[in-house]
Length: 419
Image 1: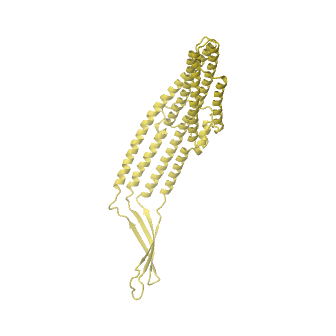
Image 2: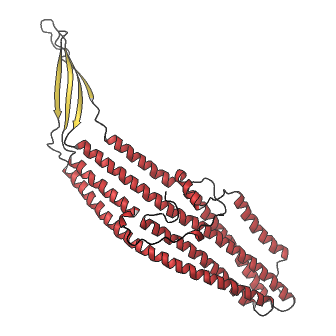
Image 3: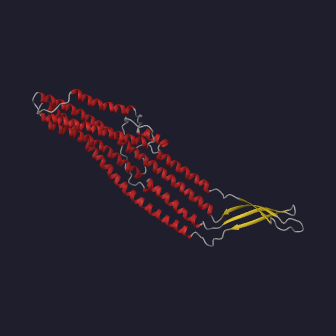
């Protein structure tokens, strides 16, 4: 019994349905800017960058607040209320004083210095976040472009599968191919249709992630600005200091800010000097008298020893964290340089393989149409072409990822203008 064969109308309808879905999705999406334009736009609307900018402003405000003086206090005291009168004269006394507390022993300067170093650390974290964002945006943008290219490869594969099915139908009709070959061609086309569906979903997911990363409320559509093919591999800077790496800069700033807190804790127990100036009114006369007073806390029970010890331990922890970051950055940088070089060689090999596979399919197709190449052989050649094209796309994407890692390790944006 022969298998049911789809008509040409059914095949065309399947292809048109895929095109209609793609066009509808693109029409409902915003145009995707180029990577450079998107990176520039992100500075004003990307949630990650806006968060760090707010943290920097908060740290600067903390510096201003740390330099503020302690507020004075106003005290009013009424004495001898209800006391027996002396010779018919009230013994009441009213005293009004203003007290200003002064931080002595360098407490205020230590607090200001600690706040300033925290602000520096916040700025270092912001720069690290901006560079990390640029690298992440490059990877996400390249992923979206790669998924789009994969979709194009899948659609081309579906077109080739449809052409092979039609050729098989014609050959079966004239008795040059068995029904089994026709079933194989149909299965190949069905697999190509499923691949288009899958990669379309992947492309949509990549574009949604891109729009979310840059803070766009509307999803982006087709990427019309090539990115992966235009990236030039930067020259390696063997002598570049590790201190230029944003992770190291941030860790150094954090360590200095935490170390400054030791001085703050060491001076916390130092007494605060309060100076009071006031006026006393006597109830039995209209005369007044000035009052002057001094207050000073006595560090008898609390000299903040535990607080000082805790600050010192935090400083040791920060120093060890800094050393770990330095070692990790050094290893990541060496690894990234190797990965970039390897990705270049992989990309070159993949492009050569794709060219060979494309030529093999061209010759195989000619052979099949002339009856010299079997259908199974043609399907294998076609599958090899799709795999070679996918391998080239993966090699481009792997190269972008390696460059993103190198960008972070060296502290420079290799994808364009650094924010």
